[in-house]
Length: 489
View (cartoon, rainbow, N blue to C red):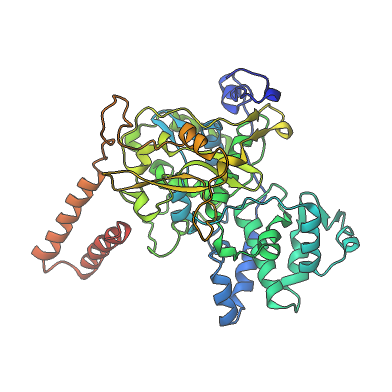
């Protein structure tokens, strides 16, 4: 991929990649990010004081559960070794057993967020956000620029989180202000974390105060995934020393797919109705020997086989529960637009991997070692439409285009969209899509077969052993019920 980044071509991304740095005999420290544990605890406490009518409004956002499920501690060596495997051109982790990535159904199951709906695509102007910030905090422009200790309340990187709390949630303000401030802090402190540790960007006030849509109408799940993709790409540079984004999603995703890295907590249990992240919080225990663990994790990944990967942690057909997950195209969070290409990781959809087609190329890409120069531009035209493609004779649909709002008359096709559709987003998992030219779908994995056999044994045990202990019978019945619920049966 040679070329000048200024003329619209793509430059190689491996030159400044941490992998080439390590392969060259160098080393870098473990990535870290400042914790938002105190903020999340304060938000949980505040929510617990709400009256029932206000609690229902907060919970109707689909976001209020996030502070309560955030991890109290992250496994930084584990996160770091996975970042070393991230390839920003494909937005996948490159493992010895092939490519694998965080998909939309992972966000749905792990975080309990919707992944369809209106894209968070607006990048509001500074003036619009400053006005909304003044109203929410009840401050003038001059007061926003005043110093709080050694730092001003308002900076380009965000507003001091402590002042947001003090000026809104801790004051006798109308509930509409409390609602906006709470959601502002939840979004900035749980899904779209920066590296500051003490500031929250005010751009969310655009969706909370300025725009007419309800906060629950937005696809915050796909936006959080696009933001995390970009952060992983940035931190794959060899000079990175910290990482932003929803790291709980990344760490819980590792535990779901890679049992060999799961915390040693004995038997982990969870309720079907709550986000799966709750099963994986490793608590606040101290971990020593950071670099030793980094090297051990790196060696373990080098030896990983495909049989050690739990390719289908949520059941044999993820698209049944989350129809948007086989979407092929770009996902967006404001000015960040990232390709989403499940055709490269079809084993996570229950299929056998074939050779994927050409990756979605950016208009411009600049990925030097200098992190401040990192920039990737995709055309906004790629994210203007939602399109559903039903594949004849198959049990799943391919969603093309982008997860955007639909007008009353259905999707509006932007100029040049159909040309882009046929160039970039033809269904990858479709009749006639196999490498040998035959009109067959990729073979399903046999996980569903063996799970069915296993459940048959459990059912026979319940029938043939009436003297089974009550605890064992209850556990067996719950196992069958959980699997049926997961499969939508």
